[in-house]
Length: 320
Ligand SMILES: [Zn+2]
Image 1 (cartoon, helix red, strand yellow):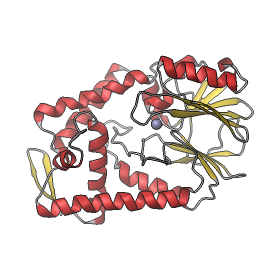
Image 2 (cartoon, protein in one colour):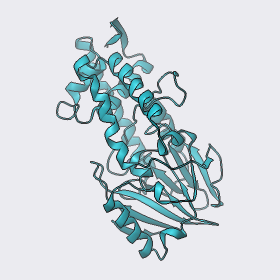
Image 3 (cartoon, protein in one colour):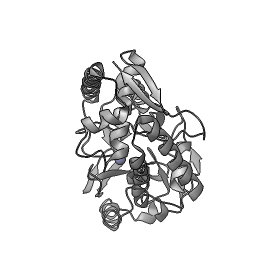
Image 4 (cartoon, helix red, strand yellow):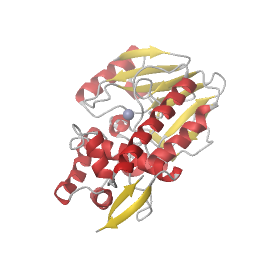
């Protein structure tokens, strides 16, 4: 918690009840005082945010616009406190003011997906666990402007948008060329790897995305950029992002090879592998652990290392 100052940027850190710990928001002074990401909707985070803004020499009512790196609850939580323009990827719209029809569709998407992954019938209701974090987000905010690849950020001259889907379908990072500063959201974090999460497609009925493959492409996108400093959504700033990205790639590949060795022994479903990789937490953290496992399968399939062995009652078995 507390604040940290950079060139026209002030980092305000607030607590979350999530395993990831604190979340960072940033005030950027441009033609408008801009907030990058809006923390999480808890009384503790709200109090810490208000204190941070005051320490920075402002009032919350001085903030003139909010720009989102992505739509996850710990980055949109305090949005309902503002009556200003809100910018982000178009995918954010459904999440900052969701309705029952959207939530039902999301549940159905995950129930169908979980079946194909081999989640047993009696555990399919785990899909409902995915709603547990919604209360930490906001529910009646409106996206007033959509940001796309290459856009200059409104009222922040010199800052440009890069689309970096993977951790979230809505994920964007913002780059200031003059000093190589990257507002990185959760695209790369210093002390933990970002989870590429399974999420419903933006168009109902479309194929599911392959978040780990998207994520790796999005890492490659920033790999050779001149980034002097990355200010992230959680934890400390990153100075040497390129070597960190190399380590993330290597670790992910090693995990995939471990799964490949399991699938060479016998064909399995994604759920079976998930329970072996995460025996302690797969029930509580269903979304995270199934996302991680599915991502590795997508990676192995793309490389041609594994194949579909058989499909029984819609459940897919793979072999190495
Ligand atoms: Zn986050």
